[in-house]
Length: 224
Image (cartoon, rainbow, N blue to C red; front, side, top):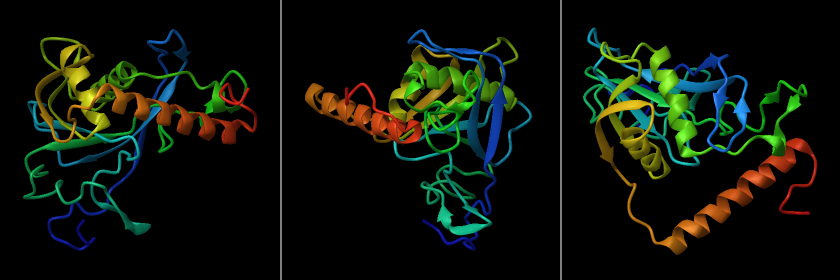
């Protein structure tokens, strides 16, 4: 990571939130009546709207990809060494977007958010979200940011940079999601055995479940 005053840093980053009041129908059958996505951008979108790069984060990361926060200069983006002027993701050339997945605890709508039906945090009642749901939400964000095609209604993201879990979302966005993707760059989305995937899946269920239990203050299905 680079120091805040490094000339190759993007500098002070600004965390933003995009609110979507249109319902998001989830693959599991539930529906979010509205949702928010936390995101950050670095660089500028060109006139043709063709230089956008969406960086998909890993499970334990967030939308804070590069730079630092003015109020907390030690909080440096997790990929700061690769995003910035003259770096591999050159912000003098590319419009880089880091967006937080829905269901996360880093600012996008998730278990800690208020359930409009109850006025209380969703907690364990937050619906299951899938990779397809992430991609659909990101497609809406891309459209909101003006990264759009002149020949269609889908969002256009020419390149994906993918990190571990982000690799799954990037490939889904390329082959079946709502994002029209020109290039997919796989960094660490490597092959894993079925047993490895199953172990990770069970761990994720445990983490999300007990996080939700803490928010809701009640037992979950795993404990009953």
